[in-house]
Amino acid sequence: MSAEKRNALGKGLSALLNDTPAASTGAKTTTTGGPAVSEAAGLGTISEVKVAEIEVNPFQPRTEFDDQALADLSASIKLQGLIQPITVRRINAHSYQLISGERRLRASKLAGLTQIPAYIRSANDQQMLEMALIENIQREDLNAIEVALSFQRMIDELKLKQEELGDRVSKNRSTVTNYLRLLKLPPTIQISLRDGEITMGHAKALLAVDDATTQLFVHQQIIKQGLSVRRAEEMVREIQQAPVKKEGKQPEALPFQMQKIQDELASKFSSRVKLKVNAQGNGSIEIPFLSEDDLGRILEMLDW
Image 1 (cartoon, rainbow, N blue to C red):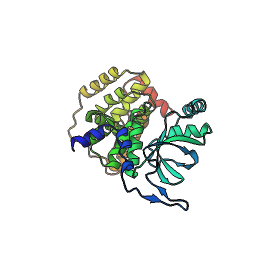
Image 2 (cartoon, rainbow, N blue to C red):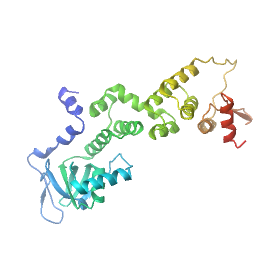
Image 3 (cartoon, rainbow, N blue to C red):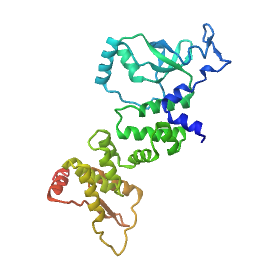
Image 4 (cartoon, helix red, strand yellow):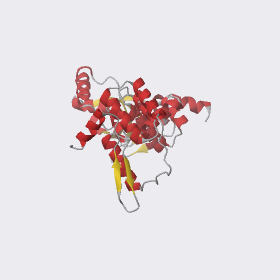
């Protein structure tokens, strides 16, 4: 990758938005049943665009918008107007597609605006996706799981390596790697991190554990006891340093369906559940507990 290309990538969204063919010569024209329209007309400028003519971005990675935050922004727009323009690409004479700024567009509609200021850009589908993802990542209110999912989507859909992704979002490779590792945690823990029940520090402590059942157990203790990140790290070290019971014969690996049941039980009870099945189909379920309180918790879940 050349130095010139790397510098452009490091600028993130601004570099992408400025990298348009607006200044090129030989612009094409498009007809839509009305007068011919130059595709370059208005490109790279801020223009007033009718809200009714703006289509949402099909590549928008953000799916949830806080209703109260939208209402607050709408009230502000009613008083002061839309200060920061949205960004669109022209489809034809009377149609635009949103590149970035869906929250501002929604709030403007709530405020009753019929037209709003917009940067008119030229972008293909891949650039549209990249712009939307990068703008999404640059939001201040993103939680760690949303960042990780956006990073993974950029890798999968834009065919980027982690180093290239770091260039795009102005983060070093180790930071990108740490976020992507969060997606290896069990879904229960990812949801807990997304909802703010645990922090990124807690999640990193859990990633130091090898198996999902132990991760789920430590996670449950973090929530129940309100453990700090430091105490969670200490608990992980204690578990890792605990002596391992030696067995003469190692148990055979469980069939896929049985392994899935074991994992689901471990998630349900937040404990290291062990499922044993013999060749005849007989077996047992073992649910260990660490204290009387922990036993009481498990018995309560069993309606004992």
